[in-house]
Length: 325
Image (cartoon, rainbow, N blue to C red; front, side, top):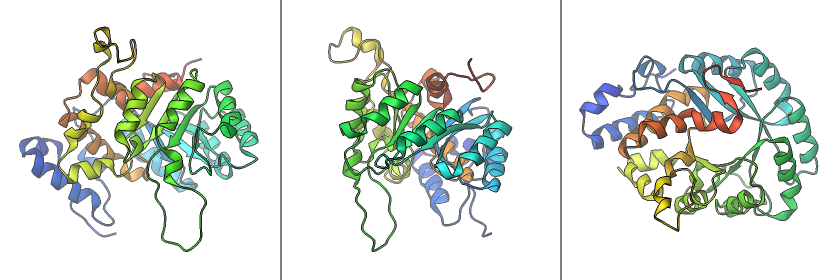
C-alpha cells in the first residue's frame, strides 16, 4: 500500500490558523489511496464518548464485518448499516455477534413490486430502518405511500437519499434523476407520516436551504452531512456558512411566530454519518468536528448530533448500546 501524509493532529490543528489547518486536512483527506489514521484520533479528550454513524452501506463480506468491528469498537461507535436483501443473512449474523456495533437497516427499490415483501422480511429479521434511493418518480409520489405506511406501522426509520446523485461513466441509459430526490419532498412525507422519523442524506446537496427549511417545520425530519459537502466547504474555507443554512434556535419560537414552537434547534436536526468504507470513520469525525468548531455549536447540541438523537430515534440506550425494551 502506498504511504500518504497523515492527517494533522487535533492539537496541532488548533495551534494553526483555521485556513491553513483546513487546507492541510483537505489535502490529506482527498489524496488518492489515503486512509485516515485512526491512531491520530484515539485517545483525544475532545472526542465524543458515544457515536452512531447514521449512514453506512453494508460491504457484503465477512472481512468487511471484521473491519467494521476493529475500527468502530474503539470509538464506542454504532453503525446504521444499509443492506440489500441479498446480504440480509450476513447482517443478521453480524448483529447477533456484535449488537454493540451494527444496527440493521434494509434497502429496497421503491419501484420494485417486491418492495413490500422485502420490507416485511427485514422487519422479521429485526431491522429497524429502511433506505430509499433513485426512484423513477418523485419520492413523495402517492404511489409509494403503501411502502411508507408499512414502515410507519413497523416503526422503521426511513432514510432517503436527497440531492445530487453520484454515477459512473457509462453508456447505458438509466431512468432516474437527482431531481426526483429534492429534499423538499420530505416535507410532504413528514406531514403525511408524522409518527415516523425521517432522515435525508447529504443535507440535500446542493439544495441546502431547501433541506433546512423543510426541517425547520418538521420535528421528525433529520439530515446527515455525508458526501462531498464538508470537503467542498473546507476547500472554499466556508465551513461557517453552515450557520447561515442552519440559522434558527428552538427557544426563539416564543417571540417569533414563524418558527415552530417546541421544535428542535437547527443544529439538532443534523446527525453524524459517513457514507464511506469503515476506514473513513476517523476522517469523517475530524471533518465533522471542524464543522462544529467553525460554527461554535454548543456542547449539548454536539452530543445529540454525534449519537444521542439517533439513539432516541431508534430507542437505543447510549450507555449500554442496547435497544430499550
